[in-house]
Image 1: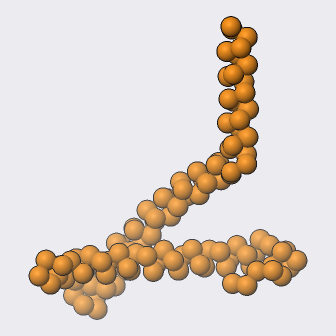
Image 2: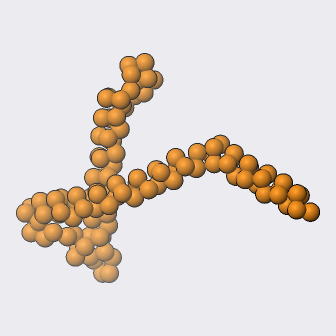
Image 3: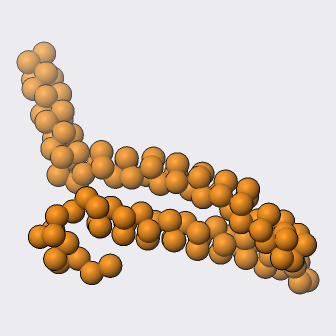
Length: 112
């Protein structure tokens, strides 16, 4: 009984590690953690740099005050600004990494 129980546990452990290796769970987890950190930086960039520049142009640091009959389209505009800044950072980071870290042979198949 004990040896059967031990055998089931080792089979489970082997299957678990096979699952992690096969589906790249660790890489996915790292991507989620790094993505969260990048989002925090982008939020700070928008809040502390983009919004003050926007304030110089339109007089307000936040667009969330814009609404029409309860529809808060100003908050949506804030989220669009965050998304565009995040998209630009990801794009230029990938361009930088491809340009500096990949060999010419590795770059051949990539079109960015």
